[in-house]
Amino acid sequence: MNQKLKFSSNSKSPFLSTVRKRVDSYFKENKISRNGNSAMWFKTFVFLTGYITLYLLIILNIFSPLVMLLLCVLLGVCCAFVGFNICHDAIHGSFSGNKTVNKVFSFMFNFVGANPYVWSITHNIVHHTYTNIPGHDEDIEVAPGLIRISEEEEVNSIQRFQHYYALPLYSLASISWVFRKDYKKFFQGKIGEHVMTHPKIEYFNLFFYKAAYYFMFIILPLIVLDVTWWQFVIGFLALHLAEGLTMGLVFQLAHVVEGTLFPVPDASGNMEEAWAEHQMRTTANFATNSKVAAFFLGGLNRQIEHHLFPKVCHIHYGPISAIVKQTAKEFNLPYIESKTFISALRSHLFMLKKFGKQAVA
Image 1 (cartoon, rainbow, N blue to C red):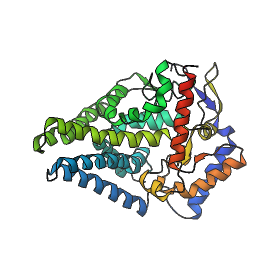
Image 2 (cartoon, rainbow, N blue to C red):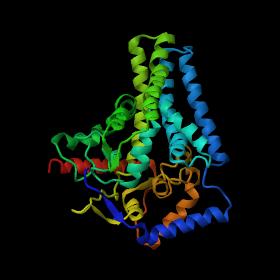
Image 3 (cartoon, helix red, strand yellow):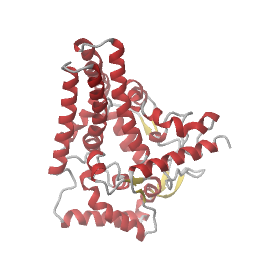
Image 4 (cartoon, rainbow, N blue to C red):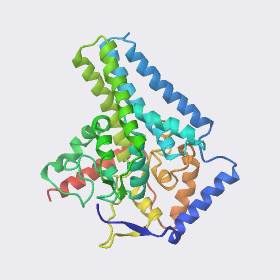
């Protein structure tokens, strides 16, 4: 973690310069913005309406406990979709060309349980720069000691079962975000190569919006709902387990499947390839022909395009994917993709089993 990493200069990456030129030409020739369009605004309306409606249906206390439990699960999944489709683009600055619009929708992240400022560091800066590099990309550090997804990680005997217990662990991601992860990351000295120094307003934002979330999802429900404390706990857990599993699966299938690599630097901290080539070897797509996946996953099933063009709204990933795929072929670079969600999940579980067996080999 203390080693300074260096990629080969992007100026020495003909692949990156070529694919950027071609994607730029696509937007210019079609006279369209890189930011969101009417389809993006429609998705925003759908998911925000779903979020608000499900929350109100629960808080109005008009249904039986069983129906309320189902609504909690649906709200958890909807929270993940709000994060995928709205907040993710807004925090990257790709939702709109207007910074105020991006900031407004970024703050919505607080109300699905996560801090947008911390995410902008851990994801936008660190993960997008040091993708899949053990010890530097903290996005791939899932339950250290329990989940092993690279040969560089320490081993223990329980990991031989990780392909069985990984999915339940992924389900805890949202609860961790709400009560632990954001605080831990905020007060770390460094995340990857990024030294953590925060504007004073971010201290206020962290605690104020966490308090607002706790009020909305813990205090207010306990006050107004006609349920016992243990029924509330079941509902709260159901919401977050559903949200956590949805998030965990989507993010893991983008970087931990067959074909993706976990490169390490040499003794001097130099990476073998330029940044763009590194992204092509560490990132994967799945279910790219599925209109359902395209609508619900906010382009995160086209992670290759997202990593190369994080400032492009995900609504455009479909058209530019053909450009990226063709260019990768011309430069003899991998374009890793699984045809379906199920095939990507199988591939991910295979990788978990592989690294688990290595732990006891």
